[in-house]
Length: 283
Length: 259
Image 1 (tube, chains in turn green, purple):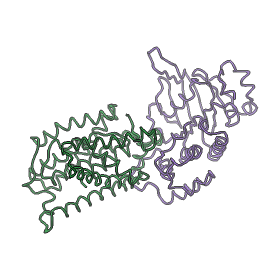
Image 2 (image 1 turned 180 degrees about the horizontal axis):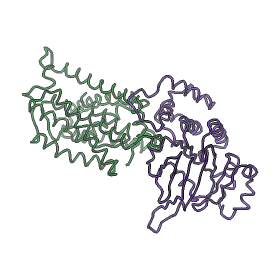
Image 3 (image 1 turned 30 degrees about the vertical axis):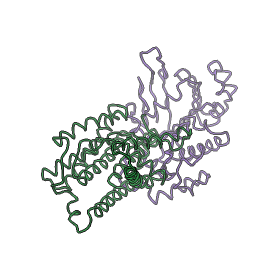
Image 4 (image 1 turned 60 degrees about the vertical axis):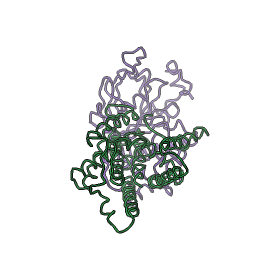
């Protein structure tokens, strides 16, 4: 469920802006690193999460600026930011991981409830993911949201209508990575530690989620796209859990995910279909 | 109204591929002029439109629209003065968005985009009225994705979008060339109607000389980045294709243009 937020972020960058943003692998642990450091420093969890989201937003904006102002290729901008963030995250935490089991987190009140820990936490993630989904749906129905969608769809056209598409790209990537950092911040508190390596493969897992979701739900409207992201990420987790139960070694998980995405993206090409191919700018 | 003063545009400057696309061009267009532009391939027609709309800036010279010097303004800041339609029907609309969403975006041409509702109820009725005028049945399909429309429908919608906020200058870049003859005629009739009703100052680039002669009150021919001739008023009304060919046939080694 927490990964649903990553998938939502990827919908904003890949689907809405058509920008292949790889910052995600760095902004996810960034969210974790920021909350871990702040919570252990005694900052209340809710404020820590807020700061983590802002940091994710800024990281996304940096990728956007590298691409739009310095004209660095979109993929490379993301990779650069991801690499820079690795050092950043180590600096923030001061070491490669911080445990959060003994401190008060956002989940502590939920854990003290008289039921199985699992139930309220799932409900919490569910609420957050759908809350963010509804907020994004609303946003993409506003004038500003229209301009952002058009930036990904037809950059030339919306520029001739007076929109600065560079700013839209920066803002959109900021929003996308804010979602991802929020996810990282929540996951770190849920699993009881933040680790600098927790973002590895996040972009591919997120992509796998949205591909699964879109296959089931479709992409006709923005509401469907965001819904597909959340549903897809749940199903993805189920598939992974099933795989593990059937004897897949945990070390091979990323390989399995990678193959899943390769198949999903590759089959249309092999069948020589144009439809369903991900349209991306600057690739 | 629109002034292009001594404009020069050179591509690949300083390399062996250097090409002077526009060579000291001077053009003054008065308010309400409907100028058709012809010229063979490479004469600088599209370059001229790109300079006017700010896709790129000139190497020398100045561009004024409605008394404002726009020479150095980037494309998105010039938008409030301009409406533009491209040859490719896919270029003027966002395919993944609905008809009403596209119109709403065009409604805000050159204005800041805020966090308020994208399509307002009052405007939706206005869009319906406009779409009815197109006579393509689009008024009942406001929520349909634009990617479902045909090329002619998309180009008609683009025309509505380009003229919705009454631009100071309308740029038409061979906007009917990619359509079948019947649809092209329909879109052209519609163009004439909208331009006349709103007294829009218009520049239309075309490859079709008959069209260039038939529409508009003024016609210019570009050759090697300069204006070869500039005819208007009564003289243009009586102009025939044969006459142009006889006078300028040597420069017009372009079959398409003579068609």
